[in-house]
Image (cartoon, rainbow, N blue to C red; front, side, top):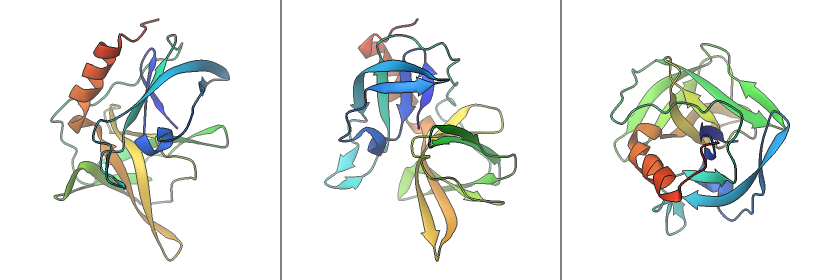
Length: 179
C-alpha cells in the first residue's frame, strides 16, 4: 500500500520498498511508472527498522487527489477515532467508523503512534497504508501490528507530524512533477 501525497509522490512504509524493485504505482486501474524510491535517511539502525518511511517518486503526476498530511506538532486525542486505508489482493479497503482508535505513543518510540482495534482487525497487505485522523488529515503510515494468541491487539504507524519537514524537503529537492 501507499498514499499519494503530491501529484507524483507516494508515501509508504520503508519496509515495503527496502530491497524491492518496484516498477509501478497503480490506482484505479492506471499504472504510473516509479522513477525512484527513497528511504528515510535513518531508516535502519543495524538490522532494526527505526523510521519506517519511504517515498516513491513517479515519472508523471497522478490523476488522483493527494492526501493532506497533518501539520507538524499536531496532537491527536487519546481514543480519537481513526480511519485506515490499505490494499489486499488489489482491493482497496477502508475501515468502518469506530473500528480503530488512537491509543498514544511510547516514550522510547515517539516516532510511532499506536492504535487499537475496537470492532475488528486490519487486513493482510496493509503495510504502507494510510491512517487518517477525524479531521481527514493523513496522520500515519501503517508500519506493523502485534498479534497475541491469534488475536490482533495493537497496530503501529509512523507519526507523520514528526516527518513533515523531511517529506516537504525531499519533494522540493527531487523537483517532483506537478502534473
